[in-house]
Amino acid sequence: MAPCPPEAWEYVPISPERAAEGTYRHYPGHGCMYAVFRGIVETWRETHGTSLQSFPYQMMDYGHGGVAGYGTLCGALNGAAAAVGLFEASQRVRDVLLVDLFKWYEHSSLPQHRPPDQPAVPVSVAGSVLCHASVARWCTVAQSNPYSSDRGERCRRLSADVTRHTVDLLNGNRSRPRRDLMVRDGSSDCMQCHAPKAPPATTVRTLMSCQSCHSVPAGHPDPSATVPARISLRLIP
Image (cartoon, rainbow, N blue to C red; front, side, top):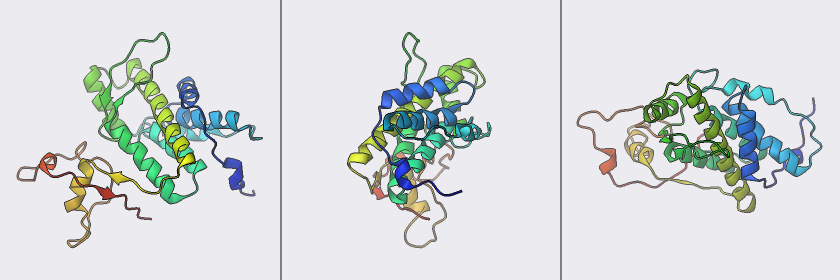
């Protein structure tokens, strides 16, 4: 099978709201990863006027619940990453966009999407890109069960939020391509010691928030008391 020419997937700006609404609509029966990816790609296809008539969206079904319910990477982010990868050929630009998206997810109060005539739902700050940590934080705030319909509605709305923000990033990158990002949060503080440029050898390779999973042991410097560091995004193949 011949590869599809790159111009067939040229990104054109689309409506964030329209894509988010599509994601919310496609969530039932498929879950977060499918809904986010389809919400973005389908809106692009309808806006672009491409000759593409079909796409095997079902390939994204696996990402529900952090991949088959395993609780790893949030499926909404997984679907967003797949969409960015489809439209952005440059690894540097692609990685900058995705790190920006993931940091937004870690630190934002979500969900914010609210369908017409629907009540608001509790919001929480995930502090992590991991599905199980994100869901647990929300369930604690909402005093809800992770297997409840309330939690399902939360993830459905959060998926719409992720779609909207991803489209905002793609639209902005279209007019002004980004090749650098400054990471300035708790993870950058941790990396000063756990991933130094000088000896001892680097032992940690991550940009995600650390303290959502790792506690600070007795005698360890308080990360919140250190001077926040601004570090350039270092991409390692």
